[in-house]
Length: 278
Image 1 (spheres, rainbow, N blue to C red):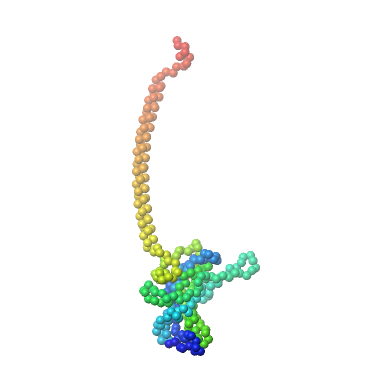
Image 2: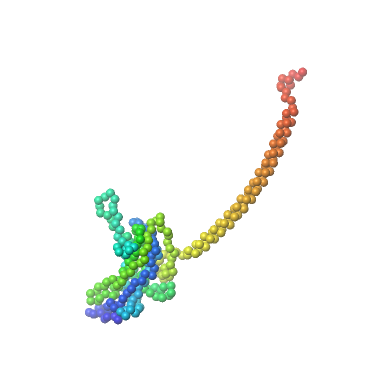
């Protein structure tokens, strides 16, 4: 039940509504983006958070659009054990006495607004999507999501607080050499992408790639068989030509021997005997 606002404030208090975050899509892996500003490698798949509302009796409550405009979820980077934050990384300067520089380890859009979308079962809900989160350094991490409802604050003080928080499953950030590659686009990511959300989608499913590889292997096997048959024919032709040439060579050798024998029957005469016969 909404409490009427005192002092003629324009909105009632909603402190009697409890909000709960649910991680629908957990990150799996990512490639370290480094400290450059151009090379950004988003976490794959993009984390997707759903929010549900319940009243004081524990009954589900529909979230109206006018209230969801005041919903904000902030993302922070933590270690695998969920005990220490990893949002800041320090890089010491070598060979200098100057203090070390510090950078944001988690870069990208770390804050998301609420989206009213339909899931693959055609059910409407309120979601928060982090499609371009990147991590600079490699390691094992987890993400912490904090929900703040600006519409759930007290009208007297005009303040609010964190309504709920939730952690994602641990994920690994690899270096460029060890990165195994991106995963396939999930059904939830494809569903939200069709509704206008900027989520990178890979259109080629894995089974098509496998079919293409099998088709290519069959094609290459057929080509190899044809090449082997052609080589066999060429070898047979080469053998036949060598046999014929060897026979010709044998005939040539016999004729040459006969010629030499015939030449040996002639008597050699010197020039003086030829000029002065007896």
